[in-house]
Image (cartoon, rainbow, N blue to C red; front, side):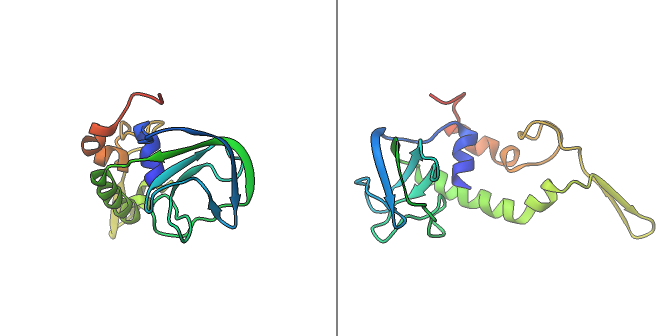
Length: 155
């Protein structure tokens, strides 16, 4: 979820770009990172994404599960990231919101009417993810709180 949020914000929170040839072996990458530091892998055929570094192994972007890094050698970049603690806390709230309401938002059903029992309808899902179609999304629900970190595009 954190990587989706970063993509929405056009912000990787990278502190530097380390380019070169990198090797992923046995689910780990040697990148001289701090314990618990988040980092991006870019330019990989198999492992592009956001991860959390731990001496015992790499975790997924939300630091919830061990990442399944696949063995490879690639020319690309490692971007250590300094994701603000406030955003990490908000990402947890967003993950909980998506867990509670995501199925309803993603449902293809726009309305249903069972005579005498219940009736409901929701706005049609438009092309934008910002909620402009009337559908409540995590982006529209948390837009104001995400705004301080949002950029207009990738730098």
